[in-house]
Image (cartoon, rainbow, N blue to C red; front, side, top):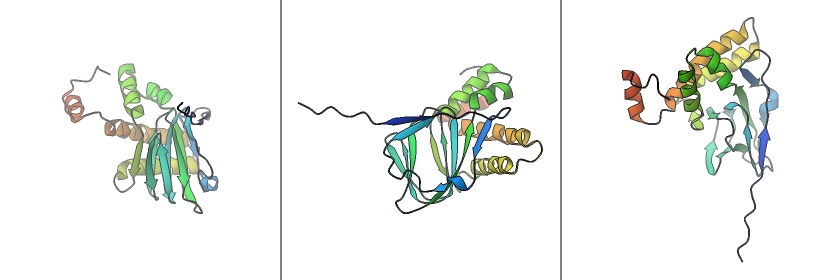
Length: 194
């Protein structure tokens, strides 16, 4: 008789947005650590997670797929998408994170509910793992938002929301399904379709 395969453990991590902000920033020294030490399970979140790795070496697991990280890379992970970060044994990695209420933000940002839903679906369509030097515009926006949130200057929520709008549009464009989408969007054929 075949042995029954044990279901892998999965952890749900719930975050709550700060009042009046579509962004929860997890920044600072707390996030300089050995990630995944003795962790053998995946987790998922209730919001879009953007992680920026400043330094360190290890493996990112996206479901069954595994990819090496080595610093100056970033992830964009949709809500409810199983993943985990594991630093190499004996090493320390420096990550910082943004959790984004994409749905709440896009519905306020865009006065067109069809376009908002299309962009939300596009942003959520896949996880991204990118190098800063290959996607410098997206990386710069992520780092700009992190710095705005870190400094907390007057009107920082408004400023970070402006940069966030540009970041989410760029991610939505990057997640186009096919080259045909690009042509159709540029010619206006998809303006009212999801």
